[in-house]
Length: 421
Ligand SMILES: *Cc1c(COP(=O)(O)O)cnc(C)c1O
Image (cartoon, rainbow, N blue to C red; front, side, top):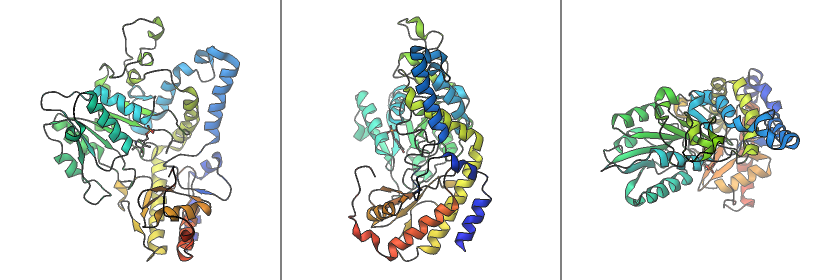
């Protein structure tokens, strides 16, 4: 019955045609696109184009290639802007997630008088916390006192009221994830932004798990800044150059970490020692773009443009709804707990399944050709990706999980994580 339902959903899927554009391994179901998205033929082609440009043109590839490298960050930003709900000038593809966070905090964190604290949360990704701690230290402040980490009541989710309560008159800046990396909870960015601004606080979001998975309206919500990686849902390749957003009301603010690629492009090669920043988010670039880690993104973003983020979100919800339905029906009494929101409006692109044997269940899944990921201590994350996963994939994953549990296949493995989990 569920298999027929899956096949029907696949037949009616307007995005099904994109599956052939990806390199899918035979006998493998990839459910880890929220950690590293797969290679598509278009991304491969745009990388090959840049290699050809280098081969044929040497230095002139900067201005005369098929994809002139000097403008590549701005070209990628134009394609990205609709995915975050911004104008192209408010977005720039540059750096990495963590470097962009450093850049934005170095720019927008301006402790004054008793307003010195930064609010984050205790469920955030460690790199973000390390960056915030080190930025406080640069200002000579003690992170133990100045970094407020909003607590989770249950270890899975954040309650927006708790975050708002932390926005006191001692707070200068709030930095939060748009989607929590473990549970996949979506925070209400519009509401949190309004509450922060009402209290004279700036606010920025880490969009690593949301950009390419759900629509955003950063400009309409009046978010101050955001940053995200392009190798997860956006399939830009391992170490792909990342993205950042700066609200246009902040154009003209000097970047905390300045470099020549943040210059007004007309002036950059004047080689003057007085920095004239671009009148756009481009001002927050630092050095020469990593062209070969940027080129694949052009091809990949072209697919997002064609598919449309609303359509992607619609399919994503159908996929995770189906996944939840199957978990409820097929994995009863096997010790699993759903660690993700059931309500659509707060559910991101993946579902977290908790189990005390999660590490070894993941290993058993991998041995059977299913690629999930594991987040210590007890979470199996499953991300059915609209552009390359089918409803039948979801069905197969659950059947395999059921078999693994019934046959206790996981007992062959140790319940420890691998180095990269
Ligand atoms: C993936 C991820 C990162 C990774 O940062 P990099 O600088 O790209 O290594 C940071 N924050 C969050 C929330 C993430 O999900």
